[in-house]
Length: 588
Image (cartoon, rainbow, N blue to C red; front, top):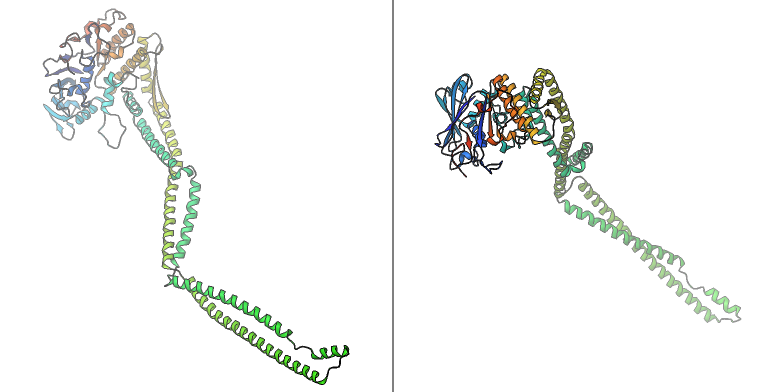
Protein backbone atom coordinates (compact mmCIF):
# COMPACT_ATOMS: atom_id res chain seq x y z
CA UNK A 1 0.00 0.00 0.00
CA UNK A 2 1.23 3.51 -0.84
CA UNK A 3 1.34 5.76 2.22
CA UNK A 4 2.79 8.94 0.77
CA UNK A 5 4.21 10.49 -2.35
CA UNK A 6 6.25 13.63 -1.86
CA UNK A 7 9.25 15.64 -2.99
CA UNK A 8 11.90 18.05 -1.81
CA UNK A 9 10.47 20.46 -4.38
CA UNK A 10 8.93 23.14 -2.11
CA UNK A 11 5.89 23.69 -4.31
CA UNK A 12 5.08 20.00 -4.65
CA UNK A 13 1.82 18.94 -3.00
CA UNK A 14 2.49 15.94 -0.83
CA UNK A 15 -0.13 13.23 -1.24
CA UNK A 16 -1.06 10.92 1.61
CA UNK A 17 -3.18 7.88 1.05
CA UNK A 18 -5.28 5.62 3.24
CA UNK A 19 -6.86 2.19 2.94
CA UNK A 20 -9.53 1.46 0.38
CA UNK A 21 -10.72 4.06 -2.14
CA UNK A 22 -8.60 7.21 -2.57
CA UNK A 23 -9.78 9.93 -4.96
CA UNK A 24 -7.32 12.55 -6.14
CA UNK A 25 -9.62 15.35 -7.25
CA UNK A 26 -8.74 18.12 -9.68
CA UNK A 27 -10.78 21.25 -10.37
CA UNK A 28 -10.79 22.22 -14.04
CA UNK A 29 -10.98 25.91 -14.74
CA UNK A 30 -13.64 27.21 -17.11
CA UNK A 31 -12.73 26.61 -20.74
CA UNK A 32 -10.07 23.98 -19.99
CA UNK A 33 -10.13 21.17 -22.54
CA UNK A 34 -10.21 17.46 -21.94
CA UNK A 35 -6.58 17.28 -22.98
CA UNK A 36 -5.18 19.77 -20.50
CA UNK A 37 -1.43 20.03 -20.76
CA UNK A 38 0.74 17.81 -18.61
CA UNK A 39 1.72 20.68 -16.35
CA UNK A 40 -1.89 21.65 -15.57
CA UNK A 41 -3.64 20.08 -12.60
CA UNK A 42 -1.30 17.10 -12.65
CA UNK A 43 -3.60 14.05 -12.54
CA UNK A 44 -1.88 12.35 -15.47
CA UNK A 45 1.50 13.48 -14.13
CA UNK A 46 0.66 11.74 -10.87
CA UNK A 47 0.43 8.40 -12.70
CA UNK A 48 3.71 9.17 -14.45
CA UNK A 49 5.29 9.96 -11.08
CA UNK A 50 4.17 6.61 -9.68
CA UNK A 51 5.81 4.86 -12.63
CA UNK A 52 8.95 6.97 -12.23
CA UNK A 53 9.28 5.99 -8.57
CA UNK A 54 8.68 2.34 -9.32
CA UNK A 55 11.25 1.66 -11.99
CA UNK A 56 10.14 3.29 -15.25
CA UNK A 57 12.89 4.44 -17.62
CA UNK A 58 13.48 8.20 -17.47
CA UNK A 59 14.07 8.99 -21.11
CA UNK A 60 15.30 12.43 -22.21
CA UNK A 61 11.70 13.53 -22.92
CA UNK A 62 10.56 12.60 -19.39
CA UNK A 63 9.06 15.49 -17.38
CA UNK A 64 11.40 14.55 -14.55
CA UNK A 65 14.40 15.49 -16.68
CA UNK A 66 13.11 18.94 -17.59
CA UNK A 67 15.01 21.92 -16.21
CA UNK A 68 12.19 22.65 -13.76
CA UNK A 69 12.22 19.18 -12.15
CA UNK A 70 15.50 17.39 -12.84
CA UNK A 71 17.21 18.64 -9.65
CA UNK A 72 14.27 17.66 -7.44
CA UNK A 73 14.01 14.30 -5.72
CA UNK A 74 10.66 12.55 -5.42
CA UNK A 75 9.82 9.80 -3.03
CA UNK A 76 7.20 7.16 -2.33
CA UNK A 77 6.63 5.70 1.12
CA UNK A 78 4.85 2.38 1.07
CA UNK A 79 4.14 -0.42 3.47
CA UNK A 80 5.60 -3.90 3.02
CA UNK A 81 4.96 -6.62 5.57
CA UNK A 82 3.78 -4.12 8.16
CA UNK A 83 6.87 -1.91 7.93
CA UNK A 84 7.57 1.22 5.94
CA UNK A 85 10.04 1.60 3.08
CA UNK A 86 10.87 4.83 1.30
CA UNK A 87 12.17 5.02 -2.26
CA UNK A 88 13.59 8.28 -3.67
CA UNK A 89 14.62 9.15 -7.21
CA UNK A 90 15.53 12.29 -9.14
CA UNK A 91 15.76 13.18 -12.79
CA UNK A 92 19.38 14.20 -12.38
CA UNK A 93 20.35 10.76 -11.05
CA UNK A 94 17.55 8.78 -12.66
CA UNK A 95 19.67 5.65 -12.97
CA UNK A 96 19.59 5.08 -9.20
CA UNK A 97 16.98 4.74 -6.49
CA UNK A 98 17.76 5.60 -2.86
CA UNK A 99 16.07 3.38 -0.29
CA UNK A 100 15.53 3.91 3.38
CA UNK A 101 13.62 2.10 6.12
CA UNK A 102 13.49 -1.64 6.65
CA UNK A 103 14.76 -2.58 3.22
CA UNK A 104 14.95 -6.28 4.12
CA UNK A 105 11.14 -6.47 4.25
CA UNK A 106 10.99 -6.00 0.51
CA UNK A 107 11.38 -9.77 0.15
CA UNK A 108 10.78 -10.86 3.71
CA UNK A 109 14.50 -11.55 4.10
CA UNK A 110 17.85 -10.05 3.27
CA UNK A 111 17.60 -8.87 -0.33
CA UNK A 112 20.40 -9.85 -2.67
CA UNK A 113 20.82 -7.98 -5.94
CA UNK A 114 24.48 -8.57 -6.55
CA UNK A 115 25.07 -7.49 -2.95
CA UNK A 116 23.14 -7.62 0.29
CA UNK A 117 20.81 -4.80 1.24
CA UNK A 118 20.68 -4.11 4.95
CA UNK A 119 18.74 -1.60 6.92
CA UNK A 120 18.52 1.30 7.31
CA UNK A 121 18.98 1.86 3.57
CA UNK A 122 20.75 1.34 0.31
CA UNK A 123 21.23 2.72 -3.19
CA UNK A 124 20.16 0.56 -6.10
CA UNK A 125 20.49 0.83 -9.80
CA UNK A 126 17.07 1.25 -11.37
CA UNK A 127 17.33 -2.18 -13.00
CA UNK A 128 18.04 -3.73 -9.59
CA UNK A 129 15.10 -1.84 -8.14
CA UNK A 130 12.80 -3.37 -10.73
CA UNK A 131 14.13 -6.84 -9.91
CA UNK A 132 13.44 -6.32 -6.20
CA UNK A 133 9.90 -5.07 -6.81
CA UNK A 134 9.24 -7.87 -9.28
CA UNK A 135 10.13 -10.46 -6.66
CA UNK A 136 8.30 -8.78 -3.82
CA UNK A 137 5.10 -7.67 -5.54
CA UNK A 138 4.63 -10.25 -8.30
CA UNK A 139 6.66 -13.22 -7.16
CA UNK A 140 8.85 -13.13 -10.26
CA UNK A 141 11.83 -15.51 -10.24
CA UNK A 142 15.41 -14.43 -10.81
CA UNK A 143 16.11 -13.29 -14.33
CA UNK A 144 17.10 -15.93 -16.81
CA UNK A 145 18.75 -14.34 -19.83
CA UNK A 146 17.78 -17.37 -21.93
CA UNK A 147 14.08 -16.60 -21.39
CA UNK A 148 13.51 -13.77 -23.81
CA UNK A 149 9.76 -13.67 -23.44
CA UNK A 150 9.22 -14.14 -19.71
CA UNK A 151 6.89 -11.84 -17.72
CA UNK A 152 8.60 -8.62 -16.64
CA UNK A 153 7.97 -6.33 -13.70
CA UNK A 154 7.44 -3.23 -15.80
CA UNK A 155 4.85 -4.91 -18.01
CA UNK A 156 2.97 -6.31 -15.03
CA UNK A 157 3.10 -3.01 -13.17
CA UNK A 158 1.68 -1.23 -16.22
CA UNK A 159 -1.53 -3.20 -15.60
CA UNK A 160 -1.57 -1.84 -12.02
CA UNK A 161 -1.36 1.79 -13.18
CA UNK A 162 -2.44 2.21 -16.79
CA UNK A 163 -1.14 5.25 -18.65
CA UNK A 164 -3.30 7.15 -21.07
CA UNK A 165 -0.41 8.52 -23.12
CA UNK A 166 0.85 4.97 -23.75
CA UNK A 167 -2.52 3.76 -24.98
CA UNK A 168 -3.39 1.96 -21.76
CA UNK A 169 -7.16 2.24 -22.24
CA UNK A 170 -7.52 0.60 -25.64
CA UNK A 171 -8.25 -2.97 -24.60
CA UNK A 172 -8.54 -4.78 -21.25
CA UNK A 173 -5.58 -7.13 -21.78
CA UNK A 174 -3.38 -4.42 -23.33
CA UNK A 175 -1.62 -1.73 -21.29
CA UNK A 176 0.17 -0.03 -24.19
CA UNK A 177 -0.49 0.66 -27.82
CA UNK A 178 2.92 -0.78 -28.62
CA UNK A 179 2.62 -3.80 -26.37
CA UNK A 180 3.22 -6.92 -28.42
CA UNK A 181 0.84 -9.85 -28.47
CA UNK A 182 3.22 -12.16 -26.65
CA UNK A 183 3.62 -9.67 -23.79
CA UNK A 184 -0.14 -9.33 -23.48
CA UNK A 185 -0.58 -13.10 -23.35
CA UNK A 186 2.33 -13.75 -20.98
CA UNK A 187 1.43 -10.95 -18.55
CA UNK A 188 -2.29 -11.75 -18.42
CA UNK A 189 -1.71 -15.50 -18.10
CA UNK A 190 0.76 -14.91 -15.27
CA UNK A 191 -1.55 -12.57 -13.36
CA UNK A 192 -4.59 -14.82 -13.78
CA UNK A 193 -2.64 -17.88 -12.68
CA UNK A 194 -2.22 -19.86 -15.91
CA UNK A 195 1.08 -21.34 -17.06
CA UNK A 196 2.83 -18.31 -18.57
CA UNK A 197 5.56 -20.46 -20.11
CA UNK A 198 3.07 -21.64 -22.74
CA UNK A 199 2.50 -18.20 -24.33
CA UNK A 200 6.26 -17.75 -24.01
CA UNK A 201 6.73 -20.86 -26.15
CA UNK A 202 4.14 -19.56 -28.60
CA UNK A 203 6.24 -16.43 -29.03
CA UNK A 204 9.37 -18.52 -29.52
CA UNK A 205 7.43 -20.34 -32.23
CA UNK A 206 6.42 -17.04 -33.86
CA UNK A 207 10.06 -15.99 -33.84
CA UNK A 208 11.00 -19.22 -35.62
CA UNK A 209 8.19 -18.67 -38.12
CA UNK A 210 9.51 -15.20 -38.81
CA UNK A 211 12.96 -16.61 -39.53
CA UNK A 212 11.40 -19.26 -41.76
CA UNK A 213 9.47 -16.58 -43.60
CA UNK A 214 12.63 -14.56 -44.18
CA UNK A 215 14.41 -17.70 -45.33
CA UNK A 216 11.57 -18.44 -47.72
CA UNK A 217 11.66 -14.90 -49.07
CA UNK A 218 15.44 -15.05 -49.53
CA UNK A 219 15.15 -18.42 -51.26
CA UNK A 220 12.50 -17.19 -53.67
CA UNK A 221 14.52 -14.11 -54.56
CA UNK A 222 17.79 -15.96 -55.18
CA UNK A 223 19.06 -18.68 -57.49
CA UNK A 224 17.07 -21.20 -55.52
CA UNK A 225 13.81 -19.52 -56.46
CA UNK A 226 13.19 -21.55 -59.61
CA UNK A 227 13.71 -24.76 -57.65
CA UNK A 228 11.92 -23.70 -54.48
CA UNK A 229 9.66 -26.45 -53.24
CA UNK A 230 11.48 -28.97 -55.54
CA UNK A 231 14.30 -30.39 -53.47
CA UNK A 232 14.13 -33.57 -55.59
CA UNK A 233 15.20 -31.61 -58.69
CA UNK A 234 18.13 -30.11 -56.84
CA UNK A 235 19.09 -33.58 -55.62
CA UNK A 236 19.10 -34.84 -59.23
CA UNK A 237 21.28 -31.95 -60.40
CA UNK A 238 23.67 -32.55 -57.51
CA UNK A 239 23.92 -36.28 -58.32
CA UNK A 240 24.74 -35.58 -61.98
CA UNK A 241 27.32 -32.93 -61.08
CA UNK A 242 28.99 -35.17 -58.49
CA UNK A 243 29.26 -37.98 -61.07
CA UNK A 244 30.76 -35.57 -63.61
CA UNK A 245 33.30 -34.39 -61.04
CA UNK A 246 34.16 -37.98 -60.16
CA UNK A 247 34.81 -38.92 -63.80
CA UNK A 248 37.00 -35.88 -64.36
CA UNK A 249 38.93 -36.61 -61.21
CA UNK A 250 39.67 -40.14 -62.42
CA UNK A 251 40.98 -38.73 -65.71
CA UNK A 252 43.18 -36.27 -63.86
CA UNK A 253 44.57 -38.99 -61.61
CA UNK A 254 45.64 -40.97 -64.70
CA UNK A 255 46.82 -37.93 -66.66
CA UNK A 256 50.48 -37.88 -67.81
CA UNK A 257 52.02 -34.57 -68.77
CA UNK A 258 53.98 -35.03 -72.04
CA UNK A 259 57.02 -32.79 -72.52
CA UNK A 260 56.91 -30.69 -75.70
CA UNK A 261 53.31 -31.81 -76.25
CA UNK A 262 52.60 -28.88 -78.52
CA UNK A 263 55.64 -29.64 -80.74
CA UNK A 264 54.64 -33.29 -81.06
CA UNK A 265 51.07 -32.32 -81.87
CA UNK A 266 52.37 -29.91 -84.52
CA UNK A 267 54.64 -32.65 -85.99
CA UNK A 268 51.74 -35.08 -86.20
CA UNK A 269 49.73 -32.50 -88.06
CA UNK A 270 52.63 -31.82 -90.46
CA UNK A 271 53.06 -35.55 -91.15
CA UNK A 272 49.39 -35.83 -91.91
CA UNK A 273 49.72 -32.96 -94.37
CA UNK A 274 52.76 -34.51 -96.09
CA UNK A 275 51.07 -37.88 -96.40
CA UNK A 276 48.05 -36.21 -97.96
CA UNK A 277 50.26 -34.42 -100.52
CA UNK A 278 52.13 -37.66 -101.39
CA UNK A 279 48.86 -39.49 -101.85
CA UNK A 280 47.76 -36.87 -104.35
CA UNK A 281 51.10 -37.00 -106.21
CA UNK A 282 51.06 -40.78 -106.35
CA UNK A 283 47.52 -40.73 -107.62
CA UNK A 284 48.68 -38.40 -110.45
CA UNK A 285 51.61 -40.65 -111.33
CA UNK A 286 49.43 -43.78 -111.38
CA UNK A 287 47.06 -42.06 -113.77
CA UNK A 288 50.08 -41.16 -115.98
CA UNK A 289 51.28 -44.78 -115.94
CA UNK A 290 47.90 -45.98 -117.12
CA UNK A 291 47.92 -43.48 -120.00
CA UNK A 292 51.50 -44.34 -121.02
CA UNK A 293 50.80 -48.08 -121.06
CA UNK A 294 47.73 -47.52 -123.16
CA UNK A 295 49.82 -45.45 -125.63
CA UNK A 296 52.48 -48.18 -125.80
CA UNK A 297 49.95 -50.82 -126.72
CA UNK A 298 48.45 -48.76 -129.59
CA UNK A 299 51.74 -47.55 -131.10
CA UNK A 300 52.56 -49.36 -134.64
CA UNK A 301 54.54 -48.68 -137.93
CA UNK A 302 52.69 -47.63 -141.14
CA UNK A 303 51.46 -50.56 -143.33
CA UNK A 304 53.73 -50.48 -146.56
CA UNK A 305 52.23 -53.67 -148.00
CA UNK A 306 48.79 -52.22 -147.89
CA UNK A 307 50.04 -49.19 -149.83
CA UNK A 308 51.60 -51.45 -152.50
CA UNK A 309 48.40 -53.45 -152.90
CA UNK A 310 46.54 -50.20 -153.34
CA UNK A 311 48.80 -49.13 -156.22
CA UNK A 312 48.51 -52.56 -157.97
CA UNK A 313 44.76 -52.53 -157.74
CA UNK A 314 44.91 -49.12 -159.28
CA UNK A 315 46.82 -50.63 -162.27
CA UNK A 316 50.00 -48.96 -161.56
CA UNK A 317 53.05 -51.06 -161.46
CA UNK A 318 55.62 -49.56 -159.18
CA UNK A 319 59.11 -49.72 -160.34
CA UNK A 320 61.59 -51.68 -158.24
CA UNK A 321 63.25 -48.53 -157.03
CA UNK A 322 59.96 -47.29 -155.64
CA UNK A 323 59.43 -50.55 -153.89
CA UNK A 324 62.85 -50.31 -152.35
CA UNK A 325 62.19 -46.82 -151.12
CA UNK A 326 58.94 -47.96 -149.50
CA UNK A 327 60.87 -50.66 -147.68
CA UNK A 328 63.30 -48.08 -146.40
CA UNK A 329 60.43 -45.90 -145.21
CA UNK A 330 58.93 -48.90 -143.52
CA UNK A 331 62.17 -49.65 -141.71
CA UNK A 332 62.42 -46.01 -140.65
CA UNK A 333 58.95 -45.98 -139.23
CA UNK A 334 59.59 -49.19 -137.35
CA UNK A 335 62.65 -47.62 -135.83
CA UNK A 336 60.62 -44.57 -134.81
CA UNK A 337 57.97 -46.73 -133.20
CA UNK A 338 60.57 -48.73 -131.35
CA UNK A 339 62.15 -45.54 -130.06
CA UNK A 340 58.72 -44.22 -129.09
CA UNK A 341 57.92 -47.37 -127.17
CA UNK A 342 61.27 -47.26 -125.44
CA UNK A 343 60.64 -43.67 -124.36
CA UNK A 344 57.14 -44.45 -123.07
CA UNK A 345 58.48 -47.42 -121.15
CA UNK A 346 61.15 -45.21 -119.57
CA UNK A 347 58.45 -42.75 -118.51
CA UNK A 348 56.38 -45.56 -117.04
CA UNK A 349 59.35 -46.89 -115.09
CA UNK A 350 60.16 -43.38 -113.81
CA UNK A 351 56.57 -42.84 -112.65
CA UNK A 352 56.50 -46.26 -111.02
CA UNK A 353 59.76 -45.45 -109.23
CA UNK A 354 58.31 -42.20 -107.90
CA UNK A 355 55.20 -44.03 -106.65
CA UNK A 356 57.32 -46.64 -104.94
CA UNK A 357 59.54 -44.05 -103.33
CA UNK A 358 56.51 -42.15 -102.08
CA UNK A 359 55.02 -45.35 -100.67
CA UNK A 360 58.23 -45.98 -98.77
CA UNK A 361 58.37 -42.41 -97.48
CA UNK A 362 54.68 -42.53 -96.55
CA UNK A 363 55.24 -45.75 -94.63
CA UNK A 364 58.06 -44.09 -92.67
CA UNK A 365 55.91 -41.04 -91.98
CA UNK A 366 52.96 -43.23 -90.92
CA UNK A 367 55.20 -45.07 -88.49
CA UNK A 368 56.45 -41.78 -87.06
CA UNK A 369 52.94 -40.38 -86.83
CA UNK A 370 51.77 -43.53 -85.06
CA UNK A 371 54.61 -43.13 -82.57
CA UNK A 372 53.71 -39.48 -82.00
CA UNK A 373 50.01 -40.27 -81.61
CA UNK A 374 50.74 -43.03 -79.11
CA UNK A 375 52.83 -40.57 -77.14
CA UNK A 376 50.15 -37.92 -77.30
CA UNK A 377 47.44 -40.41 -76.29
CA UNK A 378 49.45 -41.48 -73.27
CA UNK A 379 49.13 -38.01 -71.71
CA UNK A 380 48.68 -34.37 -72.53
CA UNK A 381 50.06 -30.90 -72.31
CA UNK A 382 50.52 -29.09 -69.02
CA UNK A 383 48.10 -26.42 -70.20
CA UNK A 384 45.50 -29.08 -70.93
CA UNK A 385 46.05 -30.55 -67.48
CA UNK A 386 45.64 -27.11 -65.92
CA UNK A 387 42.43 -26.55 -67.84
CA UNK A 388 41.11 -29.88 -66.63
CA UNK A 389 41.99 -28.95 -63.03
CA UNK A 390 40.16 -25.66 -63.39
CA UNK A 391 37.15 -27.43 -64.84
CA UNK A 392 37.16 -29.87 -61.92
CA UNK A 393 37.29 -26.95 -59.50
CA UNK A 394 34.34 -25.29 -61.21
CA UNK A 395 32.29 -28.47 -61.13
CA UNK A 396 33.14 -29.09 -57.47
CA UNK A 397 32.13 -25.49 -56.72
CA UNK A 398 28.82 -26.08 -58.45
CA UNK A 399 28.38 -29.25 -56.40
CA UNK A 400 28.95 -27.38 -53.15
CA UNK A 401 26.52 -24.65 -54.15
CA UNK A 402 23.94 -27.29 -55.07
CA UNK A 403 24.47 -29.01 -51.71
CA UNK A 404 23.80 -25.75 -49.89
CA UNK A 405 20.76 -25.04 -52.07
CA UNK A 406 19.49 -28.54 -51.46
CA UNK A 407 19.97 -28.17 -47.71
CA UNK A 408 18.14 -24.83 -47.79
CA UNK A 409 15.34 -26.21 -49.93
CA UNK A 410 14.90 -29.20 -47.62
CA UNK A 411 14.88 -26.93 -44.58
CA UNK A 412 12.35 -24.61 -46.16
CA UNK A 413 10.14 -27.48 -47.26
CA UNK A 414 10.28 -29.24 -43.90
CA UNK A 415 10.19 -26.19 -41.60
CA UNK A 416 6.52 -25.41 -42.16
CA UNK A 417 5.55 -28.96 -41.29
CA UNK A 418 7.70 -28.91 -38.17
CA UNK A 419 6.33 -25.54 -37.09
CA UNK A 420 2.76 -26.67 -37.68
CA UNK A 421 3.44 -29.70 -35.52
CA UNK A 422 4.94 -27.48 -32.82
CA UNK A 423 1.94 -25.16 -32.95
CA UNK A 424 -0.45 -28.09 -32.63
CA UNK A 425 1.53 -29.42 -29.68
CA UNK A 426 1.42 -26.05 -27.92
CA UNK A 427 -2.29 -25.68 -28.60
CA UNK A 428 -2.91 -29.05 -26.98
CA UNK A 429 -0.64 -28.12 -24.07
CA UNK A 430 -2.54 -24.84 -23.61
CA UNK A 431 -5.88 -26.63 -23.76
CA UNK A 432 -4.69 -29.11 -21.12
CA UNK A 433 -3.42 -26.27 -18.91
CA UNK A 434 -6.78 -24.48 -19.05
CA UNK A 435 -8.53 -27.74 -18.26
CA UNK A 436 -6.18 -28.58 -15.37
CA UNK A 437 -6.56 -25.08 -13.90
CA UNK A 438 -10.30 -25.10 -14.28
CA UNK A 439 -10.74 -23.69 -10.77
CA UNK A 440 -8.67 -20.61 -11.69
CA UNK A 441 -10.46 -20.11 -15.00
CA UNK A 442 -13.82 -20.54 -13.32
CA UNK A 443 -12.87 -18.04 -10.61
CA UNK A 444 -11.82 -15.42 -13.18
CA UNK A 445 -14.99 -15.89 -15.23
CA UNK A 446 -17.30 -15.62 -12.22
CA UNK A 447 -15.49 -12.62 -10.76
CA UNK A 448 -15.72 -10.73 -14.04
CA UNK A 449 -19.38 -11.63 -14.39
CA UNK A 450 -20.10 -10.46 -10.84
CA UNK A 451 -18.24 -7.19 -11.30
CA UNK A 452 -19.92 -6.38 -14.63
CA UNK A 453 -23.35 -7.27 -13.25
CA UNK A 454 -22.82 -4.68 -10.54
CA UNK A 455 -22.52 -2.04 -13.27
CA UNK A 456 -25.05 -3.17 -15.84
CA UNK A 457 -28.34 -5.00 -15.77
CA UNK A 458 -26.98 -7.76 -17.96
CA UNK A 459 -23.71 -9.28 -16.84
CA UNK A 460 -20.69 -9.24 -19.07
CA UNK A 461 -18.55 -12.24 -19.82
CA UNK A 462 -14.90 -13.22 -19.78
CA UNK A 463 -13.83 -15.98 -22.15
CA UNK A 464 -10.47 -17.69 -21.69
CA UNK A 465 -9.75 -20.01 -24.57
CA UNK A 466 -6.97 -21.83 -26.33
CA UNK A 467 -6.19 -20.77 -29.89
CA UNK A 468 -3.50 -21.80 -32.37
CA UNK A 469 -1.88 -18.44 -31.61
CA UNK A 470 -1.83 -18.70 -27.82
CA UNK A 471 -4.25 -17.98 -24.98
CA UNK A 472 -7.12 -15.61 -25.71
CA UNK A 473 -8.75 -13.37 -23.09
CA UNK A 474 -11.93 -11.85 -24.47
CA UNK A 475 -14.32 -9.68 -22.47
CA UNK A 476 -17.78 -8.62 -23.44
CA UNK A 477 -20.38 -6.35 -21.88
CA UNK A 478 -23.78 -5.85 -23.46
CA UNK A 479 -24.40 -2.42 -24.88
CA UNK A 480 -23.58 -0.08 -27.69
CA UNK A 481 -20.03 -0.36 -28.94
CA UNK A 482 -18.55 2.78 -27.46
CA UNK A 483 -15.55 4.07 -25.59
CA UNK A 484 -17.53 4.02 -22.37
CA UNK A 485 -18.34 0.31 -22.70
CA UNK A 486 -14.70 -0.51 -23.46
CA UNK A 487 -13.55 1.47 -20.44
CA UNK A 488 -15.92 -0.39 -18.14
CA UNK A 489 -14.64 -3.67 -19.57
CA UNK A 490 -11.17 -2.50 -18.54
CA UNK A 491 -12.45 -1.54 -15.08
CA UNK A 492 -13.95 -4.99 -14.46
CA UNK A 493 -10.90 -6.73 -15.94
CA UNK A 494 -8.50 -4.76 -13.73
CA UNK A 495 -10.59 -5.41 -10.63
CA UNK A 496 -10.62 -9.11 -11.42
CA UNK A 497 -6.82 -9.17 -11.88
CA UNK A 498 -6.30 -7.20 -8.68
CA UNK A 499 -8.42 -9.53 -6.57
CA UNK A 500 -6.90 -12.71 -8.00
CA UNK A 501 -3.41 -11.26 -7.79
CA UNK A 502 -3.88 -10.25 -4.16
CA UNK A 503 -4.97 -13.77 -3.28
CA UNK A 504 -1.93 -15.32 -4.98
CA UNK A 505 0.66 -12.81 -3.82
CA UNK A 506 1.08 -11.44 -7.35
CA UNK A 507 -0.02 -7.83 -6.83
CA UNK A 508 1.52 -4.78 -5.12
CA UNK A 509 -1.52 -4.05 -2.93
CA UNK A 510 -2.94 -1.13 -4.92
CA UNK A 511 -4.69 -0.34 -8.19
CA UNK A 512 -4.51 3.08 -9.87
CA UNK A 513 -7.01 4.38 -12.42
CA UNK A 514 -6.56 7.65 -14.23
CA UNK A 515 -9.63 9.78 -14.90
CA UNK A 516 -9.40 8.87 -18.58
CA UNK A 517 -10.85 5.49 -17.67
CA UNK A 518 -14.21 7.16 -17.08
CA UNK A 519 -14.26 9.21 -20.29
CA UNK A 520 -17.45 8.51 -22.21
CA UNK A 521 -18.97 6.51 -19.34
CA UNK A 522 -22.48 7.28 -18.18
CA UNK A 523 -22.54 9.17 -14.88
CA UNK A 524 -24.48 6.40 -13.16
CA UNK A 525 -21.95 3.77 -14.27
CA UNK A 526 -19.12 5.99 -12.96
CA UNK A 527 -20.87 6.18 -9.59
CA UNK A 528 -21.37 2.43 -9.54
CA UNK A 529 -17.75 1.81 -10.51
CA UNK A 530 -16.39 4.08 -7.75
CA UNK A 531 -18.70 2.53 -5.22
CA UNK A 532 -17.85 -0.99 -6.41
CA UNK A 533 -14.15 -0.19 -6.26
CA UNK A 534 -14.48 1.05 -2.69
CA UNK A 535 -16.37 -2.08 -1.65
CA UNK A 536 -14.01 -4.57 -3.30
CA UNK A 537 -10.92 -2.75 -2.02
CA UNK A 538 -12.27 -2.94 1.51
CA UNK A 539 -13.19 -6.62 1.14
CA UNK A 540 -9.96 -7.73 -0.52
CA UNK A 541 -7.64 -5.41 1.42
CA UNK A 542 -6.14 -3.41 -1.42
CA UNK A 543 -5.86 0.29 -2.13
CA UNK A 544 -7.85 1.76 -5.02
CA UNK A 545 -6.51 5.15 -6.15
CA UNK A 546 -8.53 7.15 -8.69
CA UNK A 547 -7.91 10.56 -10.24
CA UNK A 548 -11.02 12.54 -11.17
CA UNK A 549 -11.98 15.93 -12.51
CA UNK A 550 -14.40 17.75 -10.23
CA UNK A 551 -16.84 18.34 -13.09
CA UNK A 552 -16.99 14.58 -13.74
CA UNK A 553 -17.87 13.61 -10.16
CA UNK A 554 -21.23 11.78 -10.28
CA UNK A 555 -24.15 13.31 -8.45
CA UNK A 556 -26.38 10.25 -8.65
CA UNK A 557 -26.09 6.51 -8.82
CA UNK A 558 -24.66 5.95 -5.33
CA UNK A 559 -26.48 3.79 -2.84
CA UNK A 560 -27.75 5.34 0.33
CA UNK A 561 -25.07 5.82 2.94
CA UNK A 562 -22.16 6.01 0.52
CA UNK A 563 -20.38 9.38 0.72
CA UNK A 564 -17.85 9.93 -2.05
CA UNK A 565 -16.41 12.92 -0.20
CA UNK A 566 -15.13 10.58 2.51
CA UNK A 567 -12.70 9.11 -0.03
CA UNK A 568 -11.36 12.38 -1.47
CA UNK A 569 -7.80 13.03 -0.31
CA UNK A 570 -6.20 16.38 0.30
CA UNK A 571 -5.03 18.55 -1.24
CA UNK A 572 -7.32 19.08 -4.20
CA UNK A 573 -5.59 20.03 -7.42
CA UNK A 574 -6.58 22.79 -9.81
CA UNK A 575 -5.41 24.19 -13.11
CA UNK A 576 -6.91 27.60 -12.36
CA UNK A 577 -3.65 29.00 -11.02
CA UNK A 578 -0.03 28.19 -11.74
CA UNK A 579 0.58 26.92 -8.23
CA UNK A 580 -2.57 24.79 -8.11
CA UNK A 581 -1.19 21.72 -9.85
CA UNK A 582 0.58 18.74 -8.33
CA UNK A 583 4.05 20.24 -8.83
CA UNK A 584 2.94 23.76 -7.90
CA UNK A 585 4.56 25.29 -10.98
CA UNK A 586 4.31 25.50 -14.72
CA UNK A 587 7.05 24.05 -16.88
CA UNK A 588 7.64 23.63 -20.56
